[in-house]
Length: 389
Image (spheres, rainbow, N blue to C red):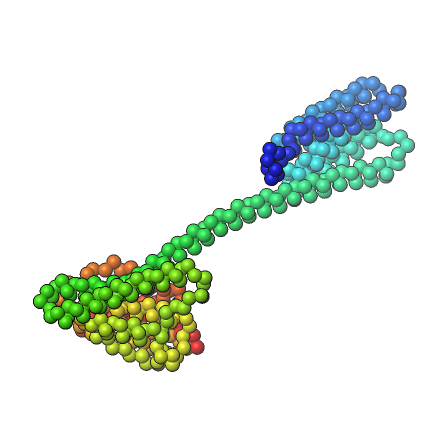
């Protein structure tokens, strides 16, 4: 549509075009034949009638020029050997070959047509026209038609190529959009797990302790309830923060990094888990700067390690180590030194989503994650990250 209601875009009908070309070829052929008829005695009557039949056959063959271009052009080459009236139709057939066939086929058909016209000139020479002039004119016209047809073919091939590229680009854009949505979902899942998992693990540990130790003193119960209340409130705040980061423009809201690891460890200590921090190069204090991406990844690593330690070994001492070689690699470790103490509630089984998310985070920045039991029966979680110099 052209944008105005009720008015459609007009399109060219190929069959109508063929009919117009047949009419034009017939009119020009009849004009050439009529010049012969105006000169009686120059050619015998049977040859003129044969010329007329050849012209009619050449014009009729144009109706099938799109389906059988080489066949129609070959028949036209035979007809113009004795029929001058078939010459216009032969030119149209040659043009069709140049448009729809290969360049080699088009050049071969050009040579065949020129040879057939040479035979016609020998059988029926043009009186009063020098042979050199006639040959030059015929060759020029046929070469011009051939080049025109090749240009039309090149343009059609270019348009087809552009359409194909547009389709491919549309498909690739759809795949990129789908991949971006998938990555966004994975990022959201990691953020929700890391942020809420830390808080909810504190709630789970202290709620389980309250349910298990029913004979706890009022002071211990009040302290556990306060921890539960505080972390429930902080969980809601963290959830709002995650949603705010997702809604805000990129880079507008500050993100957690290595400087927040100390506060994270202090919060874990206040919840009742003994944590020891070993920072060889003062990374958490800003002594050795790291990139924001690496710092955020390290923060999430420590957060996940503390969450797992509280979940699977409640009450066990935890050691957090940060070291490595500045300018080469940064190493983080979270280790709980002793197994779960007898009498504590059974540690809940995890689904492994946190470790999988950590591995994805480390891979994105060119690092890796390793974990497993220690020789003294504890558990160690380690991460190795690049440390740009």
